Length: 121
Image: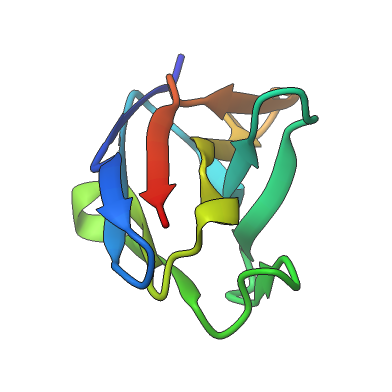
């Protein structure tokens, strides 16, 4: 089973930057997608950014040009660099990994524990 541990959340002023990290542990045969979601109070969890196995990345319109998703394969870690933060970016951010444990297994999805990001005006 894959475990994801997030770090890097916190309080930042509007216009500032934060980098979230998500370290994975466990055995994975293949990864189909890495991603970050956010959930603000009273809202549903929504996609912020993801990277597909082919290397293509996808961003929510609200974060395009400000956020960057990346991965370090050697460290089994993915990152979300958030620049020009706005108060409306305030939310709990969750990392996720989707893939397969083996060639014959079904697809799994794992989630991190969540990291609070608070942007003050």
